[in-house]
Amino acid sequence: MNGVRRIVTGHRGDGLAIITSDRVFEPLPIPSGDAAFAKLWVTQTSPADNRDERDGAGLASGLTCADGSVLRVVDLLPGKVSPMHKTNSVDYGIVLWGEMEMRLDSGEATRLKAGDIVVQRGTNHAWANVGSTPARMAFVLIDALPLGDGSGVTP
Image 1 (cartoon, rainbow, N blue to C red):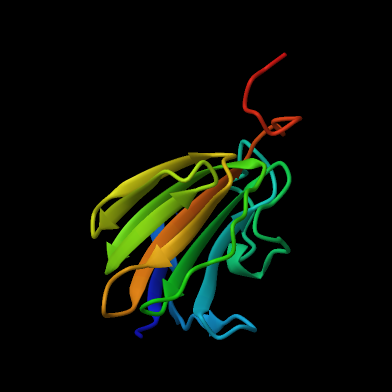
Image 2 (cartoon, rainbow, N blue to C red):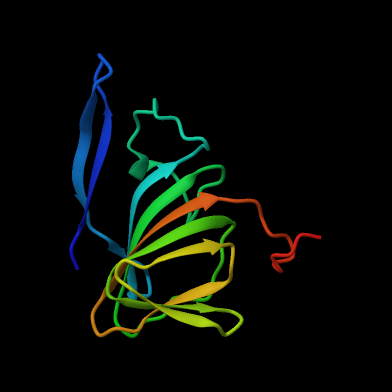
């Protein structure tokens, strides 16, 4: 699988826009070997501070970042399935290539192809690569309030 090119913009002293970084990130395999992750950017606050000159890829985070956001690319090998999981975040998932299936704990599932976008709202889900080639998705995870009992229904 190919690396992911990330371009970051900023400002010169006179306020005009410039490119501050242009680099390729190689997704790193997770311990199971079924997938590879590349963390491209993290914001540690919301709203984000565009005056912060640090490279967001180097900022600490888990899958999500409390009070912030995480941009990550995930490569999944053919026939592989992620564990069922959920996070306290709103996630924007964009299929870049390949065929994926989103599986929910209710048993509901839907197939996704390149260009499809999923908005995950703290739901319990898994990803399955249902194609014959590796699949790549980009995810933006934005911190959200916890659902409480997990029902998604506010008392």
